[in-house]
Structure formats: C-alpha cells, structure tokens
Length: 293
Image (cartoon, rainbow, N blue to C red; front, top):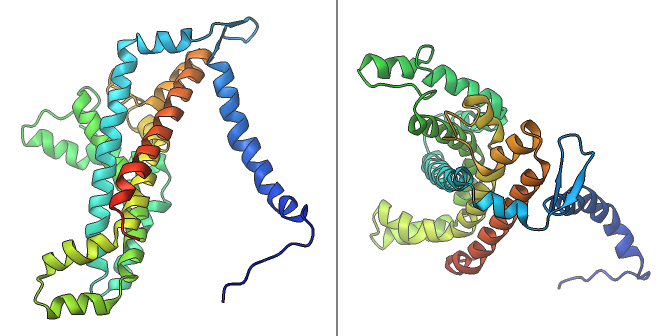
C-alpha cells in the first residue's frame, strides 16, 4: 500500500524546498534574466555608456554571415558528437555485458576517460593528430595525405568531433551498461528459444527496451555537445583555422570576453538558450512517443 506523507504545517514543505529554490534562482534564473536584459543593451568596453537598443543586437547577429556559419558548425558538430559517442558506447556496453574474461577490468578501463578534464583530452589529441608531433598526424603525412588540422578547416572539425565524442563515450557507456543489465534475462532466453538470432534479439528485444536510456542520453548528449565542449575546442583549435571550429558557445565567449561586445554576446546566449529549449521540447514532443517505458 502506498504511503502518503502529510505535513501538519502547510508552511513546512515550502521551507524544505526553499534551499533548492534559492540556489536555482541565484545560479540559474538570475544569470538567464541578466543575459536577456543585456541582450537589449549596447555599451562600451568599459561599461560606462549604456544604451537601450531593442532588438538591434539580434538583427546584427542574423545579418552576419559568419554567425550563420557558426550556427551550422554547431549543428554539424553536435550531430556527429552525439552519433559517434552514443554508437560507440552502445557497442562497448553490449560487449561488456557479455560473459568475457576480465570483464570487470574492461569496464573499469572504459570509465577512465570520463575523469579526464576537457583540456587534457585536447592535449592527448594534439599528441595524436599534430602534423609534426602527433603519432597519427606524422603517419598520415608519411602516407602522402596532406594532413595539418591547423590549416585545414575540415580536418580541424574532424579532430574536435573525435575528441569530444571520445570524452563522452564513457558517460554513455555507464548508462547503456546499466540499461542492458536491467533487462530480464528470461526475456532474452525466451527469444532465443523461439529461434531469434543474436542480431534479431538485439533489434527487436534489447534495443526497444533500451529506448528510455537512449532517449535520456540523446537529450543529454546534444545539450553537452552544445554547452560543454568549450574546453576541448579552445585547447585544441582555439576556434580555428578561421572560424572552422567555432561553435555558438565559443563565439559568445569570443565576442563577450575577448572583443568585449557584451550586447552581442548576451544576444547570442539568448539565441543559444532558446535553440536548446526548442530542441529539447521537440525531442520530448515527437521522439518520446517512440520510447517504451
């Protein structure tokens, strides 16, 4: 029988929630409100002269071809980071779920990359893909492939996608492995008795039962690719060459912190916030229908 907690004092539930609400208001809602306020202002680099300009910051933003290129970079980068990190993590989780020798060691080693800081992950990829220092970079040049991600925008985007996806694989692996281990073995045994091949069991039994985990990771991975990859991009390519690896979050940082254009940076933050909210809403509205809880 389900027990229901009844508070004698009507004020007590609000007092218990107050610390969390205060923290959320200070660290989430207040900065968001300030970003919205600054997006309607234009001020000099020292903040001495402030002027209300309405929607001009947004108009200037979308009239800038370089910003539209940055938007496309963000979409391309987020898509491939999500696909690669989730695909590789699912494959590794399926292998780790099997009865293989040294399974516990295998699982532990796969979790390690998640503990590495983004800047350190970027340094590792520099040692791999640098044209003169990197192991793979020198090998590619040795095979006649003109490899230099510092000068070639496509190569630079490929390297940052690989680094960001590699960093995210461990996180996805943990959730996929937990999802696989929660599937009742009796269901898989029944499918095997019915003659279903391993691949058929995966696509008709295991994958549908993993859909809640997959949907959760899809939302988390897209959000992480948009917001949480600044360190990798900054340490690996600095947004270059040109604007080839500049994403929306990195462009907001450059305009606000480096160029001291706070109005444009705030407008970009608002656009980014609206885009992620809309994307998450679409995911919950349409993709969640295919999720079986």
